[in-house]
Every structure is written in structure tokens, then in C-alpha cells.
Length: 258
Length: 335
Image (tube, rainbow over all chains, first blue to last red; front, top):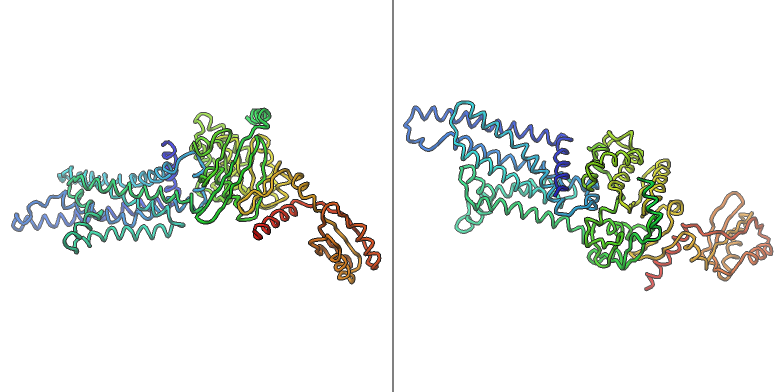
């Protein structure tokens, strides 16, 4: 397992050796910051109007639910653009530099390579998400009372969603010859997964259930509401495991493909 | 450490380091390797020859644990390779044919990464890295980005990478391809030096390199071992044929001479090798024990062709190689 850490650390630092890492962090924070500011401002408008009008039309719409519920849902959308950029390098880049062949001849197993690559991306994603805590602290600092439970679950959900997307990206990177193709295909797949939620809304009967169960956004939505449902958690774990397994299989194809 | 190693090697001089037994590798319908077997002794430099697509790279990849063979067994240093690949991989250093490395890493940083992956103990790592850096002539560029290095230097980094963890077997796939002549000479001398303390397998298609560097040669073609032995042994094996070189001093008599040579019984592969001013040179291959030289000289004199030179030539490794590979391919096609 130590080898996976070495590999993960190399990948993590390689994000910062090029501009990819810095730019990804920068844009993510700017966009997330804009989303949050817009939400806080519109909440302020709404609550001012509410204080003038009849109060009962506004029951149950708390600050946390309105601002952070939507915030987490919105930054979940940014991931569709962000993840392809983070994951495209994983295997496609190693393949381009012909270092993948070298890695296979070092004393560790295929699983350790896949795990190391996955961890490297997760670590970077972790760094990316930490400033969100700063956002929360900032809103709290404005003197507003927050409900911490839903925020914690929203954060957990966002993290799980990111990991799941990254595992999909990892798999696609392992089967693509170059980074651009890897990024485009990952983006396409994520878009399809995103659209599943709409399909679930339009379809009827058991199909609606089927698509809803498949859609990562549906499962994520529960988290942003502060609801912890075991089935959502299991869904994300399974999503990760499934794509890690496929990645492992994909790099084993060298045994018969040459 | 080098002294220790060469001393150790002296003790084990005749032990078998690598043993490959009936190894086959299939990719779908394609047989990349077909039942090959060979052995490499401790401290030997084995040259791996073969035309492109003969299965050299596949064989090397099996020896480095890149993938297991479809059937057959590989032993390295007395242990079966694919029973415990992790342990076996530690005894092997590999330089793949094409290697770009990570352009955004610095030389020392990259080698440190490799040392961690190859599990060089933390305490020894520093001195080990320094030693390899200076041996491979990388000391002055150790803080440079790999992407900015020349191809020769990048190849040295590749070689350095293969030496990390002090493996007892080093496998080099086309180590001099794409380098300029000066770099080739430098890399070759580095390889020769390495050969003094390690078992080395060197794949190449540059034949003079083999006779310069290797103790023994293994020629593979179409996934099979077609010949193995020292360069001298291979030559002796082909001694049932030898080459005669004839030069005449009148270009106008070229056709006559050619016709005469063609009329000789036993002469094969007659061709014009050089033509300059009035001189024309021919070469022909004849079976062993049949010396056509007296007959040729008598015939030429009779036909008033000015004979300048006639000699029996040694087959070069190129010719040996061509002969073996072409013959094999022909007999394969006939089957």
C-alpha cells in the first residue's frame, strides 16, 4: 500500500507542477464564490419581502436550506466540467510519456497502481473542497445562525459525488490513448449521468424509479437537504467500486492485447 | 559497492541467472512467442537480435514482469518469476525502448520517486541516488527538468532508473536508438561497464553493437529462437558456406564476368558489390570445401578479363544475421 501513497503523492504534486492544478483551484473557487454570493443576496431580498408580506407563505424556508442546499447542488454541476480536467491525466498522460510501461515493471501490483492514481486525484479534490469550509465560516461570520447538520451532510455528499465522478474519469482515462479524448468522453458520460435526473422527471411508472435510482444527482439531492439515507451512501460506494474495478480490468487488457 | 558486486559475480560466474523454459505468448490468434527457451548466466551480456516484429519486445516484457506468458516458465535467480512477481521485479531493472519520462519532474526528484517505488530503504536512499547520478553522468543536471534534457541525457536518466535498487539483472531495449554517434559511444561504454557487475540483456538491431558489447547472441525470428551462441560460434555454424570476393579491372567485361560466375557450379547469391571507374567487384557465396578461387582465376585469364583481386571473405555478423533470418523465413514459408 505504501507504493500507492508514493504514486498518489507524485500525481498530487504533478497537478501543481503544471498550471492545471492552480487554474482548476482558481476557477472552482471563483465560480463557487459567485454562486454563494448570489444565493446570499437573493436570500436577503426574499427575506426582506417576506417581512413585509404575510409571513406564513415563507414558513420552513431557512437560511441553511435556501443558501447551502442550493449552493451544494450548484457546485455539483461545476464538477461536470472540473472532473474531466482532473482525471484526464491519470493514465492517458502516463501512456503518452511511456511511463506506464515502466510502472508495470516496478515491484507492485496493478491494484496498487489504480489505487494510487485514484488517491492522487482524491487528494487534489480534497484540497479543492477545503476552501468551502471557509465559505461556511464566512457566512457564519456575517452573524447568521446556521444549521450545521445539513451543511455537514451537504459537504459529505459533495465529496462522495466528486469521488464517484473521479472514478468514472479514471476509468475513461485508462482506456483512452490521449488526454483530450479522455476529457471529452468523461465530460460526455458525466453529462449523460446528469441528464438522467431530467429523464427520471419525465418518465413515468417504474421507468421513473429506474432512472431516479441510477441518477447520481437524485442521490446527491438528499444529502443537500441534510437527509442521510443509507441507500444514497451505498449508491456512491458502489459507483466508486464499479469504476475502480473496470479500471483494473482495463489495465489488465495489456495481457492479451499486447 | 561496485567492487563488492564484481567480487560476488566472480563467485557465481557459472550459475544460471535467468532461465526461460518453453515460453509462449499469444495475443488472440497471433503467436508473438512460440515455445522459446534459453538461459543467461551470471554476469553475462546477452545480445537479443531479431528483425522488427520478431517478438523481442514481447520477450523482454515477459522478463520484466510487464505481463505473464501464456504458457511456460521463467526463473530468475532460482525463483519462479510469476509465483512472486513483486519479489522478482525487484531483481530486474528495465529500460524500455521508447521513454519520454515525466517532462515536468526534475532528474533527482524522478529518481527519488523510483527509489521509493522500488523500496530502497530510506537510510540508504540518499547515498544510493548520489552514486547512480554520478555513475550515469547526471550529476550536473540533477536539478534540471527532464523535459529540457537532450535525448542522450534522457536516455541516461532511463538507464539510471533501471539501476535503482541495485538489481542483479538489467534489461535494455534498444538503448542506443535515436541517439547521435557521440551519445551512442558514451552509452555503450556505460553499458559495457555495467556488464562487469551485472547480468545484462540487450536488445538491438544495430549489429556492430552486438559484436562490440555482447558475450553471447540470441537471434529470434517469428517468435522462435533460431540461433544462439557467441559471434564466433554462429559464424562457425555457418561455415558450410563462405564468401568469395572477386574484382576485375575492366568495366566493359562486366557482363562476361557475370556470365562466367553464373556458369560456375555451386556459386550462389552472385552480385556486384562495388563499381568505381574501371573496377568492378563481385561477391558470391559457395559451399564449404568448394574453393572456386583457382577455377575463377583460370577462367578469367582464359577469357582475358583483367583479374585484380580474388579473396575469401569472412562473413560479418550482418551477413550471418541475414542468412539465418532469411533462411528461417524461407523454410517457414515453405512449410
